Length: 334
Image (cartoon, rainbow, N blue to C red):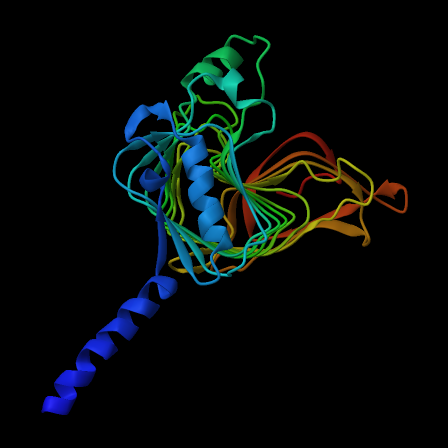
């Protein structure tokens, strides 16, 4: 027994020595952030990020309870570790003055990061003043997306709440292996351009369990996307899941393998194809081959112009219902 007691302090010292390196946590308050929602905490947030990014072991950037005013903040990699968690308990506020955010199109952005988790908390874009400007048709900037993740891989965005974004709430560009789970996204039905989740140039994206209420698309899908899985998403107000604005430039990448799944099986519903132009590789350019047990429904075709060998292409529809409007080449079969 005497020998055991003699060695016990040494064991405790070893545990204390190794614990901090395994659980590195950087609280934004320790870097000078204020919880009053009025003091600019941008520098503190960037300092906490730099510490987490430079940590050689898994690290957490912690945003505790309270309100934090943060201006344009770019959290960039690559980082020394591949497991950085942004743990948000409080609310991060954007400046209500939209001119102070510049013209970058981004508020909180994460770029070139492998192994990123953003968990919990609320992002408040405070977009009302910009919406009012756009409504009056004044000389207004387009505004920034609230949360942008670009050129990153192995990303998880879990149970994040985004309200009143000035532009898109969550935007993914050039990313691979991304999961967005349990997001709660809200903006008034008359707020312009407040897409809930925008995905572009990305692959392997899963969006599940989201509640999205916005003034624009609930989920918008741009060019260069593949292998998207959308499941158990509650949408409204909003324009549903939209694939659009494709072929704005030559040799632009298309969209492949988008699945929208309901509780009763795979079903494509509330999808808008808008402003799709270009040349089809096959004579049948628009092909809806849906299931009789789970037909496609509420499909919208708007301003489609697709040619095959310099002539109008063809369209084919099976078990699909919806509406069409604008210029439609080929003629709509919806």
